Image 1: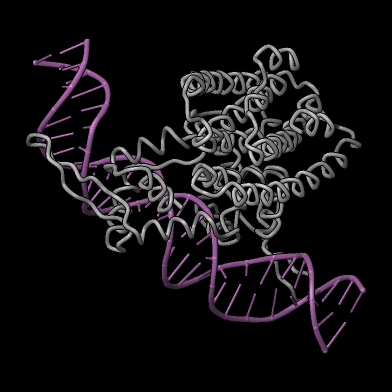
Image 2 (image 1 turned 90 degrees about the vertical axis):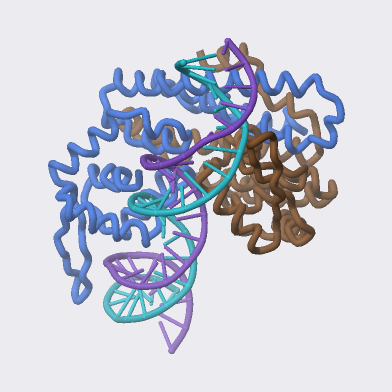
Length: 188
Length: 188
DNA sequence: AGTAGCATGTAATTCGTTACATGATTTC
DNA sequence: GAAATCATGTAACGAATTACATGCTACT
């Protein structure tokens, strides 16, 4: 995965390993972590594979290796971006991938989001059924936190579905965000 | 982590490796995965450490190893559950931990959630600032998906904060869940 | 002069997955 | 009698973290 995230970052412009890490951190840091210890070896591997290459640049006595993506790299990245349901099991992986959807034709992006939305809806339905089972039960106070993770799972999926519905139409995503007052008001 | 999740499951009652996996899958499967290949070796290690032990039970010609937690295991689990901000960086890890908060005195659970809420709020503030920066920018259509991950990050944090506010007071978590009509209505 | 940030890498280790390998029991 | 599920384990591998190790540059 990280391999393709790196390629994705390099599709924008050449970067040093250090800068790639910063880009990942800033861009999808909430959903995906990349440490130096993983980036540098991967850059080496990508170079061996001919998917990336580097030129050394000097600033005074200071050297840096600026990596850029090769045509083969672009191809590999496009294959990953377009293809494959493999990674789409994890929400984090899907969101990380969607970070690069601007590079996809609108219809394809829409289709991919639609597919994921369907999965999320099916999953949500299963969780709602499970919730119903437990709602009937007694002793709920001693199971409060066990149940609370189920509720949170439902919330998470609902957010995901709401995001899908808005994102596939490229709607204004501000409507997904609760005004702070409402956040407080609904709960407190 | 998985090590402690296993111990946590065993605090309830003895289980076979196979059943532990099912419990994890059913309970926090959305936030944490456990494969057989990780569970069985860990059960071996926990036995070596004296934190768990097993007795063999037979059903006809079929043998199964039922694992139970030892007093040392209970102690180790309690230390993990009560202590440590280490794991609390990842939301998934925090939620997985909170699955066992029923075993904590109310005030301590409340305190732990409160601490996590503060972190989430600080993080949310940073993301909101970043959002403001981008909101002013032009060319927003060609950056739509890059921005959309930021929006989703904000949603995720808002859900987390709402969950914290309700959970620490052991309030009814049904209020966190959107009625299906509203989900559709707000977006479509 | 010192701190923070830029910059690169290796090595050991941890953690976990996947595939392999086997076989019993239950349900249809 | 076939398929699904229960049940346990190993071995090879891969992905990523952490700590280690180094040194420059810019700012204050």
